[in-house]
Length: 286
Ligand code: GDP
Image (cartoon, rainbow, N blue to C red; front, top):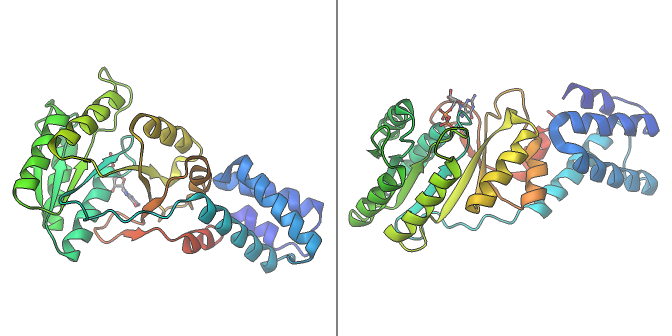
């Protein structure tokens, strides 16, 4: 966020500085609407003299963004592990980090205790099935694998039935992510959602969309499409260890009122953290 650094180094909080601030916020993927909101609040604070140039401006902007995020995101109802088994569908377009995130989650849950089952239901890509199996081994959890080209919903159904019979605690389902192929992805995912409800009442208990922090404003379209089709219950933001600070989710949170459950900060098994609004907004300006 080099341009924001430049804004925060200005000695005077004049109209030019504020214009630069607005531009820098937009460039940081916060979107025009959020940038406008921040600017209006900064202006109000300038009038009140409760905000100053330099570090005062930085702290003020962080404070304003934290307020916007906290107001937009419902607190995440902690359903994990309550129904037995708790069933999670992880969705998102190819390459965002679904399988990796599920592997990390499986590891996290394994460490917490209880039995998890990882379900490789991306039957469209043989490599994804193999990758999920490797993650299952790494995390020390059982894996149920679909056959390449098989019926993903049937794999998920069987997995939930098996997990119920074996009194397992969590079922973590990896899904396909290709958008533009013959079988429409949303229809396949909706079918899985329906079929899961037949395997276990109220399943899936959660559907989380994985968003790549480097996606930029295109992430909004992804959230809209998946949310309209499936009714998401949360988001996971990956690749925050890269150059992107994930400013996009401030927009997403406001537009869709969806809680961010976890963030991915690397490719390793331990590189998953619960989302923290204060930490996240402060890191936007590191
Ligand atoms: P999927 O197609 O959505 O299942 O995505 P994958 O789980 O296969 O991940 C795609 C690529 O992104 C892989 O190379 C992962 O190692 C990488 N990846 C996933 N999460 C993160 C993260 O938080 N940070 C970084 N740096 N890479 C990640």
